[in-house]
Image 1 (spheres, protein in one colour):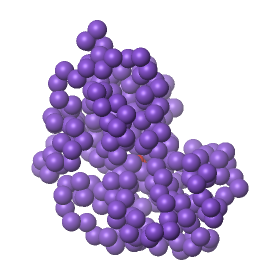
Image 2 (spheres, helix red, strand yellow):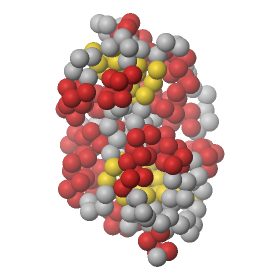
Image 3 (cartoon, rainbow, N blue to C red):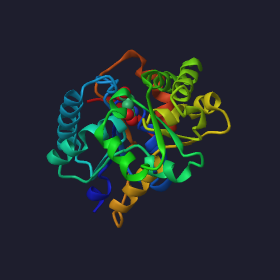
Image 4 (cartoon, rainbow, N blue to C red):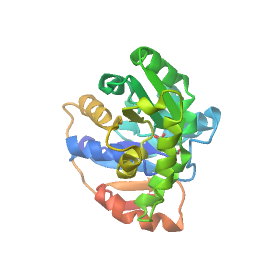
Length: 266
Ligand code: DGL
């Protein structure tokens, strides 16, 4: 019994972005043992090709699930999910929860009918996003903007470095410069890194704009897929990186705040 109860939930991202999803999971399943995986050797995913991301993510998750035996895998990354979810489902037998841009709730929230979407360059060009738009926001205007600088900004912020608010201003200006962009009242944070810099984004967009991301929905999906299961943490939760880097130690306070008290390299 305690064997099954101590099986972890594996949460995966290219970097620290998935910590925004982990925070939502902690709020609803505080007892769940978690292994958080950051593929920092592959960061950033946003500038890579579809083929490279699909091969990398399914290969890594295949090896990791074999070694770590999670009860469930959460791909806490919009880029990896919108590109590789189907490929990963083909190779893994454990339940998989993906992260997809929160276009559906954004469409319900907007009053002006104009929604902004900030994501990586890879995410915003996906057919997956086209399909969400057609299904849930066909009567709205959805303006997409790829902002790799914000990934860099979130990584720096969680390492305790001062961040330049200009990157957040450029993201807001980029969206607003699109036709209809001045009427944006709702912005989908379609990259798990972005909620980590919500304060900076809030200042850049100003008080008239609301943000939405998928973290709470993902956490609820994990709750429903693990319904009736026991959870027992037999050792401190682990943060696993795919490459050792000197500045990983700078992440220790952010990892500890996320309940990740051990660090290792896969
Ligand atoms: N956190 C990832 C996402 O949700 C992307 C960051 C990257 O470019 O690797 O899309």
